[in-house]
Length: 315
Image (cartoon, rainbow, N blue to C red; front, side):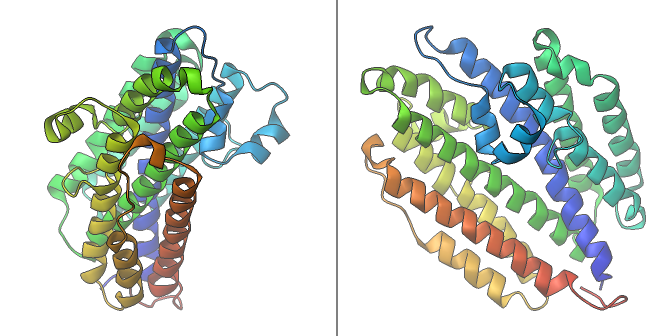
């Protein structure tokens, strides 16, 4: 058994660590996307703010929606609670208060990553060294995850980490798919095919899914097939099906998991029909929105079920 406050901190340390990695991935891949797009197709950096639904906070802070302000907001801005540096601070705080239930080296790696990010954040904001900086952040996150996976007992603490990691991963996965679909719907029909060839390859790369897609699907990349892979593949660790499966499996190892597993089963049971890229329409956008609502509800149920106890109660 574990104190509910410790369980909550482990859960959120995993969510924030995944958020750090996802933010670094998002900026890096978007940088590549803009570089590879045909010159007659214009895209705004502000699309990234829309992906994370941070428009209101951004517009309170910045008047110009240019590359520098967007990247600064996503990576470094302490007024943005979801920025990379803000999330790293929360990882550090949550690990600091749970050091007795995670491998000893976790605290050291978290501190090293936080110091590197703070001392080199200008590399991320400036374009010339951005990829090196972001890749180092991603590798630092993966090193921490690897340590936890290789040296932590599969007890209740581990299961809260797993639920936090994969719920955050599913959240960003739906946002990226939604952004890609919205981009295609807004584009001129004459440029949609050309735009789609670049966009869907970058969407796969944002999830480190490009080569797995090639090996599994064995056909050229298009919107419908890439989306089906990222939603339904049960073996790829960043697909929505895999993420929800991991959350459900960990929940079953903990008490009082019925409402949570029922919600997850409901999400997994519905297989949205995607026969062609024409099916990536407003109805599919609504479906992704329903998944987002389900993610919010699962987080709420996890919080109510295991974290809202009297002080001293166990999760």
